[in-house]
Image (cartoon, rainbow, N blue to C red; front, side, top):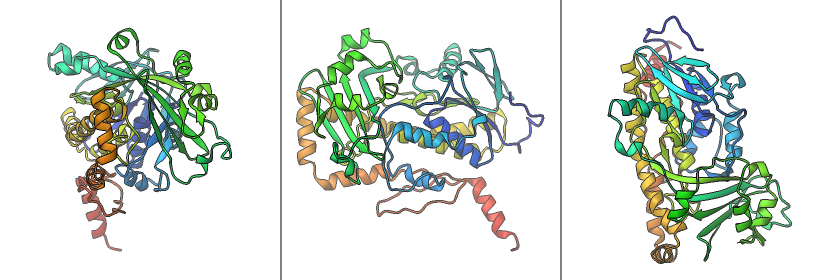
Length: 437
């Protein structure tokens, strides 16, 4: 349990409790470490093991990763487990507590406390809910807001489930059998089925591996009867059998890729869609899927540049939140709440913009209705390249960087939105420059 006798001091740095050891939580932990802020991460599972398919890193996040010395610009496509491992390796093992399922969050004028299912409790200045779509932190805070009748009605509504996804990443494969692995760039293939409302994709990634997925558009009656299943080893054998014979343009079937994927790395999950309006309350704040869930994140970025922003949005949340924590001047509830409000103000508008774009892209890339097919044909065959370039430039202009580290210059020719400066960092730099050599 975190304790500090100087709790009322406005000069003391906050102690942050991060709930969830996913990409957003781990990345935030590293950012806090870089600014000297103490933190602890609480993970409900007995270990940290990311599952899933491919993650695309766009120019919206690469400058910040370069600031941290994590990544250059050689690869844009990664397996999600590999990206997760990169972040996990940056966190000291003693900072992560496992088997800690948070059941409640309470706050007072001086601190916030999380209570876990094993009866333990931990106290800090700020609680960050990075615990995913079915966030226990969000549920606890929303329950409090419902009692006072201040929670927006839309935040209390259930998540919309429209698709179910089967995904995984193979073990290293033989390049002679799969020549696409010899390519030095990613070759994404996206197939829209004529029957069964299925769409499937495959893309080569570093390490002679292929990431793949198959997505089934649920009909209304299927949504009502199916219950949520998290990313995990219990993949649906029925769905695997359904998609096994689907052809992939690598000279193989989806079944061949599934057989080359360890069972524990195959996952089945429902894809929900929602952007919550309430992201923070007093000393508690949400990041990533806990506050905005974009179910479908298409990968065809050349023609549909608004897509593929799920993981990127989560990382951007962590950057902006870390910047706002860095500028906290007072650890009073008012001081912390003001910083968390600033985080929300900076991020919400961009997340909503990406969410709306993804909804349009979803119909074009995954839609099976006649109208969807017509629009898809027009977009992929007649949309001018100039329109695509203009949309790409607009999407990539937003590139939040870590405010308390030296900024990375723009490597390209496209426009970049101005960075939100850190008042504290500017003062520190000015003070340092005025010191005698």
